[in-house]
Amino acid sequence: MTTTAPPPTKPEPHRATGPVTRPGDRIFAGMARGSGIALLVVMAAIAAFLTVRAVHAISKDHGNFLTTFEWTPSLNPPVFGIAVLAYGTVVSAIIAMVIAVPIALGIALFITHYAPRRLGGPIAYVIDLLAAVPSIIYGLWGALFLVPHMRGLNLWLDDYLGWTVIFHKEDPNSAARSLFTVGILLAIMVLPIITNVSREVINQVPKMHQEAALALGATRWEVIRLSVLPFARSGIISASMLGLGRALGETMAVATVLSASPTLSAHILDPVGGTFSQNIVAKFGEADDFGRDALIASGLVLFLITLLVNGAARIIIQRRKEYSGANA
Image 1: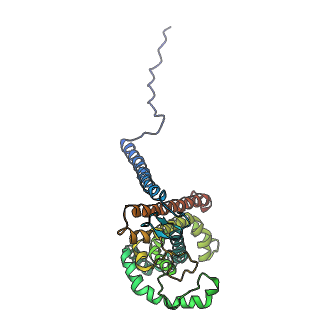
Image 2: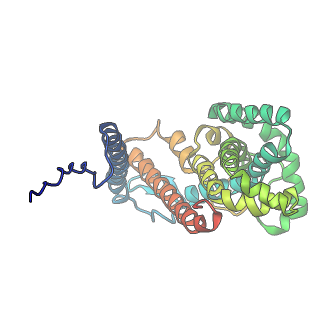
Image 3: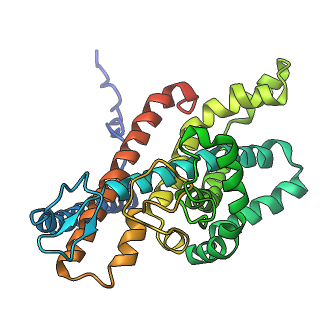
């Protein structure tokens, strides 16, 4: 009895054990990684440069760098501090954000949910144009138009809110070249940035979430409050941080409007105080080598403030992200 051999079996095709990586993907991943590393190197180089020059100035400072209200690096020994500059920078930025963020969010919601298409498009276009206006144009407008027209508002605030100390004006006849005016000007400047980013984030909210809320009988405001804002919260915070970054570092517009003085006062309607950027642009041309080091030291403080603000914003975004629905 003869036995037949079984037919030869075909070898099974080789199966890849992992995802296939294409050359283009590897190149793109390498370029992206290199870009991130290059950014970190640039940031570290800037921080190192500012630190080296700042240490040279601080080591020769006769006063307390953080609490001295004078700024006279030309003296021997020099005397300067950053208390007034830090106060003016932070206060003007806070005023700008308090004014700009609610208005920008309202404009973004109006364009995306309330305005008809024929009206929302032109408004968005105008907002985009405002973001492209140079800083010096805002500064000239603020000095020639805003400052003269702020006198009436300053007197009204002094009459009705002067008891709060913050809105008390020592000299009613002085010009409105104050931190309050600077804050309003900065609010106008950062308004387009916050509005545009917030509008784009709100447009990314899934339509199904909004349609489901409407199907359950929610009003338009309830849809915005329960579906749109929770999802877009992280993006709105990011937009606000972008605006805050420009408010903290704005130079020409502030230098054109503000009458700086080495005085620390809670009266934001008086021409007192100053900002880091305004002081640097005003004093850099006439400063000697040591004076430039002192100005660089103040720039280092502004650099650190910006890093702290961005770091705090990142922490807030990460903590809020899990509740926003953005990970769904």
